Length: 128
Image (cartoon, rainbow, N blue to C red; front, side, top):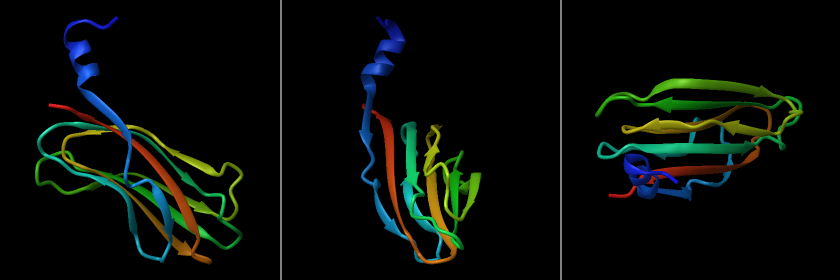
């Protein structure tokens, strides 16, 4: 059983499915599929998945993750993946990050027929 500060931290976290979890129809632009920004308390992006099963020959999609590490700072690219054609592993898993100032995940289909992508994200915030 956790004691002291660890127990306080565990009891102060609220984990949930993000309201950004949804289906997104690509339109050729860089579309925001997840974004959180706060300057008050840190939050944790626990994980996410993007279903790439609709990709077919001739399709290309770019997934980017951005992180802001200072108040009022610029979101900077921390990860980028380019996926072309039908995928053997169709569930893209996006790994966790902690931030106080902001995280953004985007999707941009750059070639082929615009597809629908089902995205699911989980996050945890501090309850004060």
